[in-house]
Length: 261
Ligand SMILES: [Mn+2]
Image (cartoon, rainbow, N blue to C red; front, side):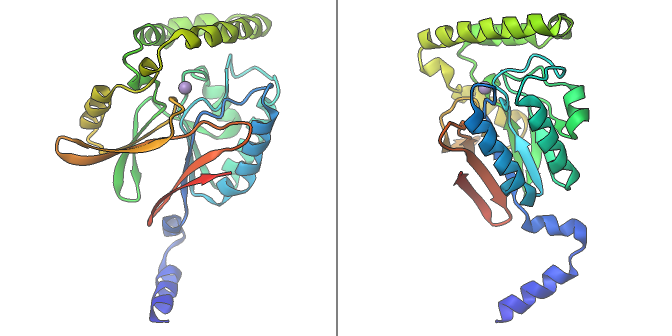
């Protein structure tokens, strides 16, 4: 009884800016949205209307799209996604997006179209009092030397401008071909080199002085407990969305929960 009235009093004394303390901060990644996966698009749009609309912040940690060949691509479901993200932002939810290895060509026009803020590869956020490092996750997979070499090349302005200056039809064609090629390529790689390198994890957590890390990319959802410099650390790996389910990591001031929708 007393607890309830104190909480009511505290809540009523809070300014509007403080009410976010009671609102969730959500993390998702690896939805791989595309024309071929309408079930995932539907689930994502429902999520934006329901769970996301009640949150204070939504962080999308990369690979929202299965492929992104430029902000001018109107292939479904791109326009519908842009529209619904814009509505969510306009309703007052802060939406952040960290490009992944498949949608790293997301650019300023997408950001202007939607109001979604694009983030750098590594960002430190304050998660209810704990500094937390967020990243897509591909940069942690340092055992995959061929991929890391390609990543360096493809993230230069020269490479990006070269691709984005090509006509849209040509980009669409090449993307199709590339997806097919990457499908066969991936099957040949050993499973170990597709996961994060623990030394790289430790280095990055030390560099950013963060003992909580959240990332996606590897499609190996888990919560790993370990120590970095004798300090207990945690690494949250987000789950990829599938035809049958979507996964959300949700934090509030009492802790976290993993929701499946
Ligand atoms: Mn990825």
